[in-house]
Length: 616
Image (tube, rainbow, N blue to C red; front, side, top):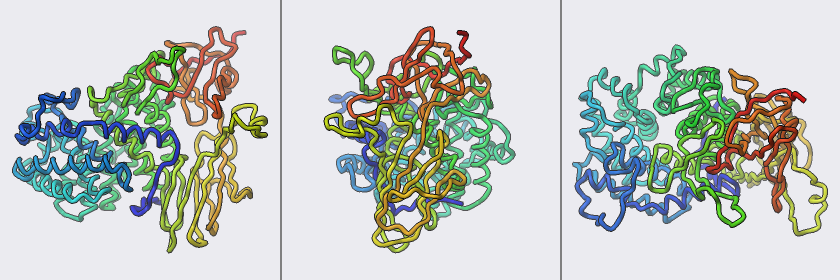
C-alpha cells in the first residue's frame, strides 16, 4: 500500500545529531562567497567586468574556471538553501539564494534569453558530434535542479522564468539531435538526473514539452536491461546509473506508467537485494558496483562513494512511497547512520592532553568511506575541492527531515527515529506530533535514584511520540520495526502496554487520538555482519551502528562470531550525563578500542575482522 508526502505538512528536526549536522550545513553555505560561485556564469555571459575579482581568490577543485563542470555547485547550493529555508528559517541564506537566482537570470538574458548555464553551449554541440567533454548534461541538470527546488520550496518566480528559457533551449536541442545520437551521448557521459528533472517539472506543470523532454532523455539501453533483469551493473559506474533510475521513478510518479515502476524495482533487486551489501549499507568500490555477493576482494580505500549513498537513499525513499515496504526504511536508516553521518560535516570532538586535536578539526565530506584495514577518511576543505560528493553533502544534510514521516489515508507512519516535530492536517483538524529520544542519561549533579540504578549502559533505545490533536480523531499511527532489534519491540500508550503485534515490518496502532503519549522501546545489542563470500570475516554493530576498531591494520579476534560480547565489552561507557557507544576488546593477544564509525575523524580505523574460535 503506497505512502505519500503531503506538501502542506511541516516537519522540523529537534535536538539530535541530524539537527547538529544540518546546522553545520547552513553555517557553511552562509560562509561561501556567492560571486565566486557565480563566476563561471558571469564568465560565460561576458559579465566578469562587473565584479573586481582581483580582490578575491577564486575557488578551486571542480569549481576552478578551467574545469569542464565548473559552476555545478551553484545548483546544489540552491537546492540545499531551498530545503533549509522552506519553512521560513535562515533568512540570510534565503536572501543569498534569491540573489544567486536573480544573477543567473541576468546571465541568461545576456546569453540571449535561453542558455542559463556556466559552461559554453558548444560543450553539448561538440559532444553530439562525438568530441569528448566532461558531463555537460550533468552540469545542466544540477543547475536546473537547484532552480526547480527554488520554485518548489520557495515559490521563486524568477527561477521559473529561467526554467522556461531552458525548456525552449532543450526542445531545440532535442529536435535537432537524432535519437541514435542522443542514445550514444547518454551511454558515454554522466547525465546526472536530467530525466528526473523533466519528469518532475512535467508533474508540476502538465506541459507536454516537458513530457517530450522526459521521454527523449531516457537511457533506453539501461532501461531495457532492467526490464529483463539483466545484470549490467557489475563493475559499472554506480552513480552514473542511479540518477537515471531516479528518472524512471519520477516518471512513474508523474505519469503512472507501470513500466517505469518495474524498471525501478528491478534495478533495486539487482543493485541491492541480489548484490548484498557491506555492513555500512554500501555496495561499491572504486565508484563501481561490486560483484553479486562477492565483496571480500573489494575492501579498499575507495568504498562507499558519498554520492552513491545519498542517491541510493533517495531511491529507497521513492520505493518506500511506492510500495510501503519497511525494508526501504531499514536501508535509509543504515545508510544515514553509517554513510551520511560517517561522511558529512565532521568536527573533532576529542582533544589530546594539550587541548589540541592531532587530526583536522573539520571536514565537509569524505568522498569515499574506506573499509580496508587501517583505512583513513580523506576530508574535503571548504573551498579547495568541490567534488561531486561535496555537492551532494550540502543537499543530503538539508533533507534529513524528509524521511522521518510518511502518510497514507488515515495513517501517519514514523519511519526514521529522528527527533522531530510534524504539524499536519488529519481529516478536518490539525495534529502536532513530537518525537523525542527518551533521555537515557540523568543529571550527575543531583541525588537521583535513576542514576544509582542505572549501573550500566541501557540495552535499548526508547522514544516518545507526543500526539496533540485539535479534537479527538480516529487514525492509525504506525512505527517501523527496525531490522536490528535484539528482542521484542514494546509500545505503551499513556502508560498502558499495547497488545498489537508487528506485521510486515510495522507496528500499527489504531485509536481515537487527542492528547496522548506513545512510548516505544527498541531493544538493541551487539551483532555481526559477515562478508557474503567470507563468512569468518565480519564487522561488528551495536544496533544499527557499525563499530570501528582504532587500529592501523588488520587484527584477528578470538571468540564466538555470533556473540560479539565474548570478545568486546563497554569502555568509558558514561561521560558526564550521557552514555557512550565505546567498546574495548578483552581476552585477546593485543587489545584495542572501538567506537561508532560515524565518530571517526581522520585517524586510522578497521571495520572488518577475521573472527576465530579461541585457541586457548
